[in-house]
Length: 308
Length: 292
Image 1 (cartoon, rainbow over the protein chains, first blue to last red):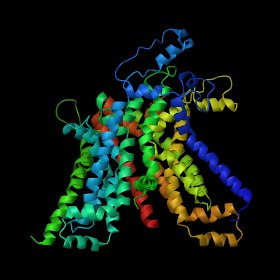
Image 2 (cartoon, rainbow over the protein chains, first blue to last red; image 1 turned 30 degrees about the horizontal axis):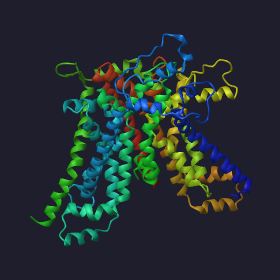
Image 3 (cartoon, each protein chain N blue to C red; image 1 turned 135 degrees about the vertical axis):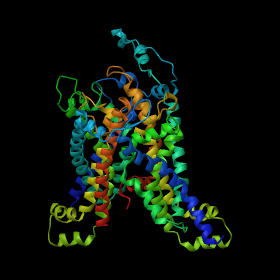
Image 4 (spheres, chains in turn blue, yellow; image 1 turned 30 degrees about the vertical axis):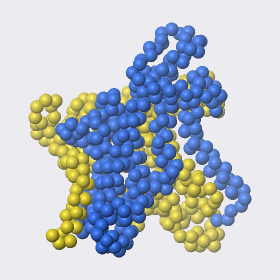
């Protein structure tokens, strides 16, 4: 493949155009969430906010069951700026509580997944657990049947054990969904650690749990981070379980509460500031994870698909 | 107690949380979904054995066929879109050039966003009155005087609008799979093709693509399996409309179970989805086994 300098010109031209196309929706959402209403709702969009405002963030975050009545009947309200801003009030719930709920479920899923998968992976690799291979196959089995086809019996199960409408129910379901990839990753991670290390620790009289936490886990950190990041991805980004299994407003998850904002008005009512701000709020935690743990993210998310 | 015996016990103890979770939240619902699909579930009282009635009810339901058809049309349209973009970006990122790591991390960026958030974001981009896409189309001379370009007006246009969002959001995963496949191709092949004087396109067509076949198959199966599970992008962006023309199988199942409270037919829908996905995953694993 011969390459001339003009080829490289094209190579970077194409790449940078793609970068702009990919980034643009996120950039547009970000700047929209900071624009003043008069600048946001206009047929002449601006490509950067001329006047920054945090009002939508303030509204969706601090709104708490106080419904601001909208006067939509009078036609001439658009002329006075104050009344337009009144209309921007979110009619419904704020996202503070849902944000905390989502954070609780994600943190719970991460912690539980790490504990269960570390213990399971360790038992199925290092220890002489009976039926090791059978158990491993059993744990890997859910790959074949995605959880989405089990929503009806899962709902019934949660009802039977009283876990609908609870964070714990979601945490347990997400953790169960994480088992195949999690145990697989931890098993690989432990497999690559020489057994002599464990034997030395045993001669020193350490207990099995001590060996895991002080000898094995520090060496399995890449695997651990992959599992952690993927658990975060799965639980934070979940929509369907949160939608079906949670039905009280105080337990709503973030992604569902944004739906309320999206539904909160017709095309002519002005929900867009709140919705873009909400989208940014929901994207922020995961983008922070992505920035710092990118390689584990890529491995986790594609690993879920590939499972070597 | 011997050391081995103790170790076995500790091992069983350690693996038990995973096994319990699996039994309660996977195996039991799995068995139960078949059980439920053969029973009638009244709101009160005991379930009654009805044999294949739920399946017959489901197959006679027009909405089932409509959602099945739509899910297949969606799958068949979005898969090539995803693949073309993923293949293009994978080839770009596989070049020996400065900046490929940066490009790759940007192309992967939308993947980390949830389907729900991506849908909200694109809902705003597509907004009928103030959306930037409408503005851009107008700017380049489409749409004309009529300022209402409503992509949600017909089922077809809604589907293409969602397809564009999904392509933006999801091609990164397939790109990574294809890059992994590309990197596994040894340089010798390229050198040989260069020696024979092949042009760049000839090289891609005759060397890269055939050697990449397993990764391509994997990427395609993934996209097919993913599209059959499509839910939130349609719930959020089209809400199944206009007039139920963009209702997916999973949406139909959820409606059946939680709007109409017909748990039996809903469970049998779940079984159908399960069988489709099971077959696809088995093919996927087969492909993977055979080629790696």
